[in-house]
Structure formats: structure tokens, C-alpha cells
Length: 378
Image 1 (spheres, one colour):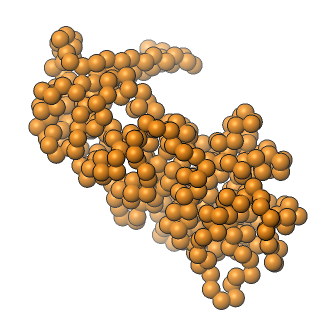
Image 2 (cartoon, one colour):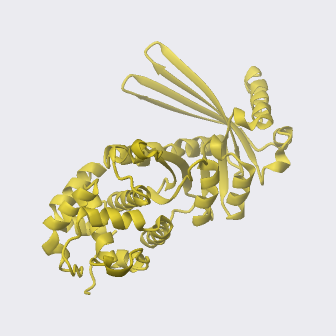
Image 3 (tube, rainbow, N blue to C red):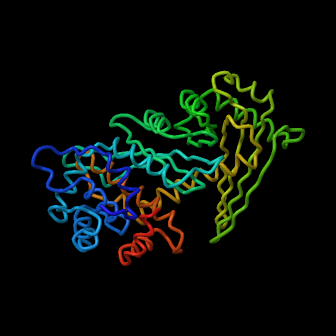
């Protein structure tokens, strides 16, 4: 096979073991994987659309794929991805991500979960799957994903996901469900730092932080050891004001009462967010702990950056890839199709020669094979 822009993709995903046995291997597994990722990049959101894309591009695919029996049917795509081990596909996905992009030092890695609503099959009593993903905020890359096991929650999936990642020099941000001592310890053990939200479910820790900052607020932060930062955003008739107070003062840390239970905790912080729409005003206070000795400005920026996983990953998957409308449901297929979407999103975001949103880039890749090759080159 001549070297082609998909060569790097083939070098990683060609290692995956074929789950089929006997006479079921009429089509090469690598051919199936390459056609599927190209189709998803170009706008396919179902196995029927993947087959249609493959048949329309068959002459092009024949330049670098074997295709011993032509383009597989949609049933073949569905059957293979239902059988394929998602952990094996996920492992090669992670190796591929590391090969195409080196993470920025000091990167904020946001961890958050998302339900793939369309994967629910009520007729057969199957609930929708939930995935926990890692998002490199500066590079705008999906780093990996782990499925939440049935009957469990994100607390069990987060450690599995973290174990897959290189956290050296990175700041990991997680919402309150991930504020667990074991998770904090794992992040530190993997040479990373954490910024964790503290809510009522943390009991004494939350109460102590709330009381500590309540005293400061009543004193208007006079003589306070806290650093301060503020952000103001105004658009579309909405005004948002975000403020942060943070300190690494020893007395404050000792006041937590549980300082020794949280590995290398160095900073406590409070944010105040105010949203004004017309005459309506909404104010919320939130509390955080971090292993990073950081001023309020950095804490506020990092926490704000965390939520890019919502609007740059989850929202894009729903709008540009129609993830929640997907009816891929059988066995491992929903999780594996999610990996295909993440791969496509990574490639489309890394391609900078064309401006525009991900949906527009998907359309262009489907229309223009030259552009598709640019996307595949990473």
C-alpha cells in the first residue's frame, strides 16, 4: 500500500484485533475503520449514511484501501462496531491523539460527563449510555472517554479516564461529583494539579468554606489575605459579572479542619457570579479547593475555561454531529460511534486553513476531497 495521508491513522488503528471469526471477514477491518471515520468527518451520522458515503467515494477509496469485496453494507458496519472492543478502540484513539498533538504545558484538562440520549432502547429495556470525557482546553482536543457502567456513576469512571492520561504539568478541573479524596490523590500521584468544586455533598468541608468566606464578606474583605479578580461580559442584553477571592494562607487552610485529608491542598477560593437580564438578577456563590498555589485571577480563568467542555465539545456534538438524535444502539456500537465523533471533531478543529464552524467543515470535507485529505493529515 502506498503511503497516503491516512497512513498515520492506519499505523495506530491497524493494531486493533478483529472481533469477527470464520467466514465473516469479507471486508478488511482497517477498510471498515477508515471508511467510517471519513464518512463521519464528512457528515454521516448513521451506518446507512456511512455506507452511502462509501459507495459514492468507492473509486477514491480504491486508491489506498484493499476493498476485496467492495464497500461494506450498513449492516456490516453496524455489526462490526457492535462487536468491536471500545477499550481497544479507545486505547488507539489516545495513542493517535498523542501522535498528532503535543499538549500545551500548564494545560487545563476539563473532565465532565454527557449522556448520549438517543442510545436508549426502551423497547429492550436499555438505558442511554453516559460517557465521561477529558477535554484539553487550550489545544481543543478530546483526549479520551470512558463509559459509565450501568448502575454506577461518574465517580467510578473518572479514575479510569484519568489513568489513561498524562497529567504532568496540567491542571485538572472537575465539577463537584469528582470532588473525592481518592480522585485528588490520583491526580497528584500522576504529577498533575486539581481544581475541584465543593458543594453541599461535601458536608463539613463545604460548611467550613462557606463560613470562612461569609466572615470575609461581612468584613468586606478588609485586611483579608485573599487575592481578588473580576470579569465582566455584556452581550445580547445580558450582563455577567464574575468575581473570585482566593488564598493560600496557612490559617485559612488549617481552618478547613480536613486539610490533611486532601492531598497537597494549597488554595481555597470562592466565586460570585451575577447575571442580569433586564430587571432579573441572579447571584450564585461557589467554593473550590486546589493543589495549585494560585491567585484569584488564575482560579477564575481556569474555572471559566473548564466550561468550554460544554460549549466547545458537548454543544458541538449535539449541534454539528446530532449526537443526541443518533439511533445507534446495539451493544458496543453507541460507545464506538462516540469515539468516531471525537476523532472527527479533533481532526476538524485542528485543520485551520478554512474558517467556519465544525458543521460547515463537515460539509466542505464531503464536497471537496482535497480538503478531506487536509483534514485527515491532522
